[in-house]
Length: 187
Image (cartoon, rainbow, N blue to C red; front, side, top):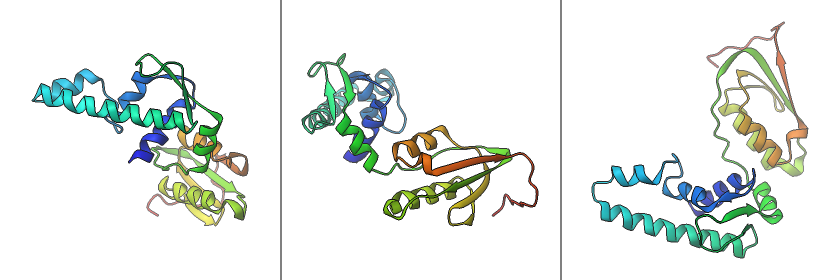
């Protein structure tokens, strides 16, 4: 669980410095970011809600301190909600080593997408990750490194490939005329 918070924080910081208060919203509910006031109003017992929030804030500050101590992030002010937190070069390197979850949402399109890749053996884990993601996006494997499908390509998927340093080894084509290709939506 701590690793997921760490990854989520680092991913958020990739786009630039972020206020600590915004990062804290991830700690309140990492799956659905909500305002602090909504959490308090929905809770039957106001005191319990405040106590839970305080525990989460303490946990959040511990994780931020640990990340700062490890040299993964940098802060301009200590323990302030208006402090700006940035990712360091070391943080970017650590983030590149970890594989993203690969859970993306996509829509069906009328055009066929062909994805071809040539990822070396030394990056086997990244290659397996890519195959797994393509399968989740409902692409069909024609060969080990040649996939076709009707799904759109999510922007998060492109960003994750760049983050893993495999984007230049992946080629994505859009085909407007099927030719002899047959793609069934059931399989």
